[in-house]
Amino acid sequence: MGMGVTVIIPTYNRSDLLERTLVCLKHQEKDESLFEVIVCDDGSNDDTKEIACSFESYLDLRYCYQKDLGFRAGTARNMGLHLAKHEICVYLDTGVLIGADLIRNIIDFHLQYAGTIGLGTVHGMNQKDDQHPIARYLQSIALSEHPEACLRNPMLKTYPDSRQMQFDFYENDLDRSSAPWSFFWTSMVSVETHVLREVGGFDESFHGWGHEDLELGYRLWKAGIHFRSDPALHALHLPHEQFHPVQMTSRKNHLHFVRLHQELPVELSYVNEALNLEMLLAQFNVADQYLPQDYEHIEPSDMDPNQEGRRLAVGYMSSSFVDRLSITDVFACNQHNAEVIRTERPTINTDFKAGFINFCEDDYYRMAVITDVWKVIPLTLLIVLLDELLRIAKQVYLLDTAGLDLEKLPIVGEQLPNGFNAEPIRRIGKTGVYDITRLAMTT
Image 1 (cartoon, rainbow, N blue to C red):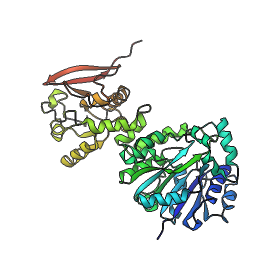
Image 2: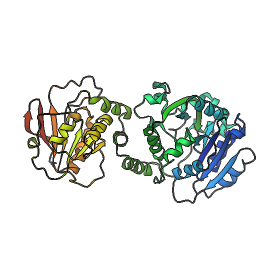
Image 3: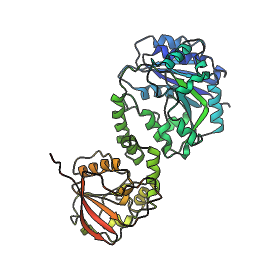
Image 4: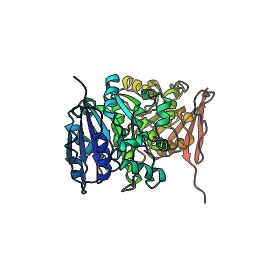
């Protein structure tokens, strides 16, 4: 039995852009019996329904509608997923122009790469100026009977996909990336239907613009699904004016993403901003090979002899270290390290995270100790980490082991940022113990 494709298009009050996308689908080379189109209306009050239904004589098309309760793109896309009858789901944004060969190329991709997400190259994803001369030129072509001609225009090079550099670097095999889920943009992406249903589709708790797609990508990645880009899957996202400043909800939704998945890759995606997420994840993944973990001479009396209250350890550590210091909670900065401690000490609350963002109250912990991991964290992020640990712990201690060979790591700090004081408590062998406080502000 051959594969078929369900194209799912969420839309809201952009019937003009929707029409352009549907015209491209009308011109597909593949037999229309091999694909269907589901237009998922997120509460439009324009002529979206009339435009969508006008293509029913050309396409196997269904129109579905949900009440306007705000921007709920994930919920709209799930309507399409529930109705999908084919083996592959392709998500397209409204206003995305595709070539006449897209359906054929999608099917070929999934026949070759089973269990793999297909990421398309979408030109214009970073282009917000719809009045730019090139944008206006492409829009004039897009208004023709053959908007897919835009994809053959050499001026398209001026509208690159911002992910193209990574696609090229990994030679399209995104499993080589430390964070392939960060490329999961639903402007154009294809996934096997049963896979989407198995992970539950989009999380409908996201309201407003952004990150519901990355959150789904993250769950797909954790489920072991492969990621791959393919130059044959390409499109143009027509630049257009924005109804609302997307930044207003993007940051809120990003924080919601962190709350749902309190793990290092997600919290780093929130706090690293100008730094490279993949480089940071690679740094954390290999740093435990160069840093001590047991600290066999360190005892509770070297820091806080008070055994009451919750005690947090952050970084890389052994189970025996956790035992000696009566640690109740572990933030392990490496997935393997976290799994080992979970297995060996199941009564300890162990998370794969660093603690940049925590959803607990102030002074939740009696004390927190940071292992030598602080030396491999960029200063800008170390400030965030120290500020947060000083918020959630009454006392913060830092371990400093001399003579570590960290030159092979891409990021080496080995110094505290300005604004913090490190008061030496004692030195045991090569490791010093420091009490960390904020410097008093002067006027």
